[in-house]
Each structure stands twice: as C-alpha cells, then as structure tokens.
Image 1 (tube, rainbow, N blue to C red):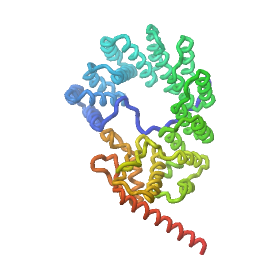
Image 2: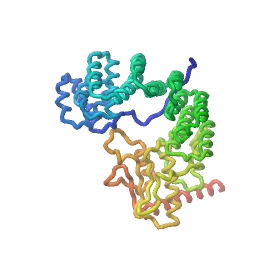
Image 3: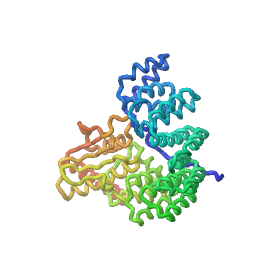
Image 4: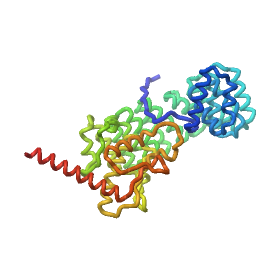
Amino acid sequence: MAMTRVVSLPTSCSMHIVSLSKKASGVVHQLLQGRGRGRGLSSIVRRTHHFSTSLKLQVLDELIKQQHWDLALVVYQQVKDAAWSSQICQLVSSMVALLAKAGRQHEMDTVLRDTHGRLGLSEKTKFGCALVGSYAQLGLWADALQQFDALSCFAGPQRFRSLLRAQASMNLPQEAEKTFEELRIAGYEPCADDYKSLMFSYGRCGDFESMGGVLELMRDHEQAIDTTIYNMMLVSYGMAHKYFETSLTLQRMLDAGIAPSIKTMNALTNACPSLLALITMKNTAFIPCSDSLLDEIVNHFSSIEELSIVERVLELGLPPESTVWVGTTWTLNLHNMAMGTAYLMLMLWLKELAFRLKNVSAPDQVGLITGWGKHSELQGDCLVKAMAVAKLSLMQSPFKADRYNKGRLVARGHIIRGWLLSRSQAISEQSQDHRISIVT
C-alpha cells in the first residue's frame, strides 16, 4: 500500500451534529463540575429533566464529543423517545460507538435494542449506515466492518457508500477506492458525492496524482465538474502550499465559466500564512488609497508565490452576493468568510465606498455584517468580527455596534463619507511629504 502524507486542514470550530448554544455549553460545564464534586447521576437527571428536547440534544452531542459516556447515557435516556430524524439517527449512532469504545457492552446492546424496536426497514438501513461512520470516527474499524457486513442483507448501494465515506473521511483513500470499485462491481453507478469523497481524501493526504486520476475518471463518466470540485482541489493544493497548482486550478475554473464562491476565496486566502500574519499585526490597518491594494501590502509578504495568490483574490473582487449598493443602506456581509478573505474584502469595500461616495449621494446608513448576529446565541468567539472591529477602531472609523444586532456595525452615510475622504486626503499628504523629503 502506498504511503500518503496527510495535509492538516484548518478549521474555525469543532464540528457538532447540532449547534452548541451558550446555554448548552453552560449545562455541560455544570454537569462535569457536579460529577467532579462527587454528585451522583440522579442529580444529573433532576438537573436536566425539565430542559427542552432541543437543549438536551445539544448537551448530548457535546457530551458524546467529549466522550463522557456515563453522562451522555443519562441524557440519552431522556431523549430516546423523541421523534426520529436524521439528527437523532446520527446522535444515537455516535452514542452506540462511544459505548463500544468504552467497553460498555450491556449499555450498548440496550441502546441498539431500543432503537431497532422503533424503526422501520428504511430507517434501520440509514441507522446502520450511520453506525459504520460513527465506529470509524472512533477508530473502531473492526466494528465498522462488522456493521458493513451486517448491512449486506439490505438492497441498495447505501452500505458501500457508508464505508467509502467513512474511509475517505478518515484519510484512507486507498481503502476508499477499493470500496468504490466494489460499489461498481456490485452494479451500482457511483454518484457525484462518491467521486468527491474519494478525490478530496486523496487531496487531504497530499496524493495529488491520484486526486487528478479521480478527476479524469469523473470526466470519463460525464460527471459534472462543479464549483465544489474545484474548491476541493484549491483547498488541497493550497494547504500543501502548491501555489502554482492553486493558481492553475483557479484559472481552469474561470475558463470553464464556473463562478467562484466565497469558499473559493477562503481556499485561496487560507493558503497564505503571510496574509494571516499581516492581519494579526496590531498596528496594521489602512484605507487603500492607491490604484492597487496589492501595492500597499506587498512589503508585508515574504513569498512572491503567496502574493500572486492574494493578487488573484483581489482580481476576483467583492462577491456580489455579499454587497448591497442600492436603497437607503449599503452593506458588506462577511458571513461565511475566512479571516483572510474577510480582511481583503473589508479593505476592498472601504476602497469602493470611498470611490462611490465621491460620485453619488451618501446613503442614510452604511452597515457591516460580521456573520455573528444571526447566530448570536452560539458558543464561541467570532474572530472575523474581532478583526473587523480592531482594524476599524485602529483607523478611527465612525462605525459603532448596532443596538439591535450585535453582529452588525453601522454608521451614518454622510459621516462615513467625511471620514473616508479625510483619511484619503491625509494619507495622500503624508505620501507627498515623504516624496519631498526624499528629493530634498
């Protein structure tokens, strides 16, 4: 078996089956503290029984994620009769896998028996497929393969796909390709997601030749090469700092007439550590006033190759779906943008604002949406919002937090116009003084 090198992909947060709210996070913290102080499981039952089902599911998801099987089992008992859904299916399969890893055979058999007793054939099949993935995520490959074999009595390609995606997600692309071939031998045509899972697994492992082979296989079988495929390749090349291949893939994407998405930009900016270093410099903030934003940040880059990637992002410009230039409020929405993307788009937006406000009347209000207000109850820190606030504060901007939406920064249009124009003039005068001092 050929050895592959796993390329570590950055993430902004841990993955949850359900979104973890601040309240759920607090409940989990209290439960762990209570157990540490010697409180029995009965106190956990009393503490959680009055919670809503939604909150209990969030708590259960986090307890499973942290692998506290005993506490998770208590909460599971309170939600096991909830209406069956794909969310419940994934949680219960994760619960079973966690009990298996903990060696709690009796408890695991009880959960399986209770679950199978309430499901029809179709739901049992989906649950069995979910179990394959859950076992694999915890490294229980013997259990995963046993469950895969147990699904053989059910017709359809689902069992192959569950194993293929489990292997692909766990960076075992050679094994995933074998399952891919078994799927075809069994008479089932691989779907687009099967190809994507296999291709991205090779990409994450740095096996770009095999990744390209899967791409050619997709073309041979007339599978659509869409935005997702190109974004997967950009992420894979970018995280390996293969800048030439990254730029070439982007050009092929554009030549194919496929419009780049915000995820495209994220893949590009995440590949540039110098850009992220520039963002974290506390004294780095400016309003672009020259014809090229690239000219103003070039001195902060140690790699010409990285700079070329940033140049491509700037050429793509502001995503149309993220800006509003009509009506009484002009806005930029940073939602779903990675840190590097958000920073560049913020700088481009300020430049575009300054240009537009020289030629048209100012709107009543200018707003910046950081992507945090809509989900303001979720746990964690919004790094993009913190970056935007820090940079705008350093520039002494008039933006203030919206009283009704903490994920939004707002300012009056005419005040923004005066600020932008005065800043541009001040920077221009500083540049002129600097040129005069050089001459004299």
